[in-house]
Length: 241
Length: 107
Picture 1 (cartoon, one colour):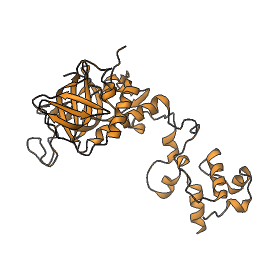
Picture 2 (cartoon, one colour):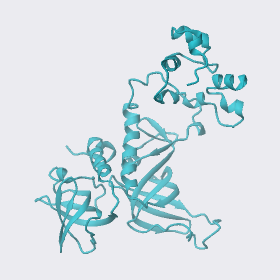
Picture 3 (cartoon, rainbow over the protein chains, first blue to last red):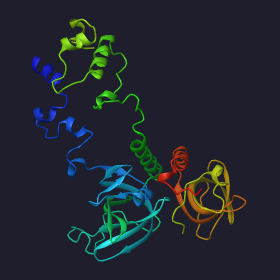
Picture 4 (cartoon, rainbow over the protein chains, first blue to last red):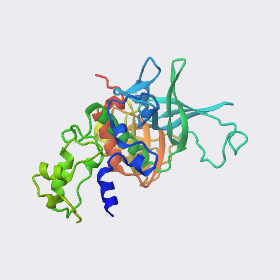
């Protein structure tokens, strides 16, 4: 009983190790200046075709957009042309912001479909809208996207959704998060969670202290919290509803 | 076909006269070779042979804005009856507010 209580008190960012769940403890993922350049920070960014065409290519053949490195991208578009070769299918996509070639390699080891056309997959036809997940490639100075997945769009609202999502992410990188004023020096996601209605005054005070104090993996001792919040020790402890 | 077709609604037509644009609107009326759609206001459109519009359905058209602010259809796609026009309007707003990710602006 006592154990579980202490466990939850001290486990911010350390759950991975303790629980054996195998994911990376929170802190390292949030560090803004990531030392690991490579696979540590794979991202999936929603973009418009214009953004793909405008993306800046770095000397190490990485691409960057709004000053941020991009790896995986997702986009939508209307199929303007399909060209099937023996090793790949090239789709010309148009999303209103530009046109782009998207190449999907044919997996000759695929279990179904002798001619590369998997009958279980929904068919992609001319003028259909599709969503693509893939990576930007430059081959002989021709920019295209190497697609991992292409699927037809079933609900056309996904187009509006995607374009708005691409805008939000673009604004995030160019202007910062929407609550930039409140987000100074913050590092945890939990900080953003609003307190539920009916939270006691003492609990709110404790929350405020936790929110505004610098913290390590060990958390804060209740004595410390009481001191910072100018509260009685009894108030900070056992705040069960 | 034009490479870039900015998404617009009726109030933007004047700014985009003689340009090729993309409009998502609701089909109000069909009159043979012409039709009226609603996209932030009514727009008269001139249909082409391949256009198959369904009344009350959403339709996305790519077309050229004429001098009288009607639109000559190049292609049209039926978007069905379940389109969130508020979201579509938000997209048009974002398109022009943050045009750097949607279309090159000529000054």
